[in-house]
Image (cartoon, rainbow, N blue to C red; front, side, top):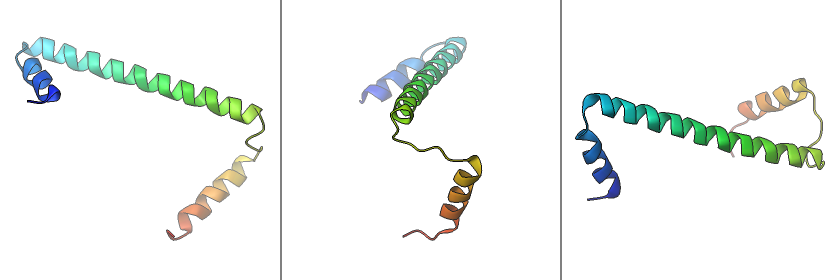
Length: 75
């Protein structure tokens, strides 16, 4: 039996209220983990921007580029 199957089997043995609590705890931890990943990515992007890796562009220019890429057939 795999670890995931063991965890699921154990979780199903919990009373209903504790199963709900476990779900909420896992969701909160996943959200916090994702927020941390986003923050790290944002920090790295700012470092790269400040180092000159990216150029300033207007929002209109970026939107136009995105629209054009959506209209182009896949290569």
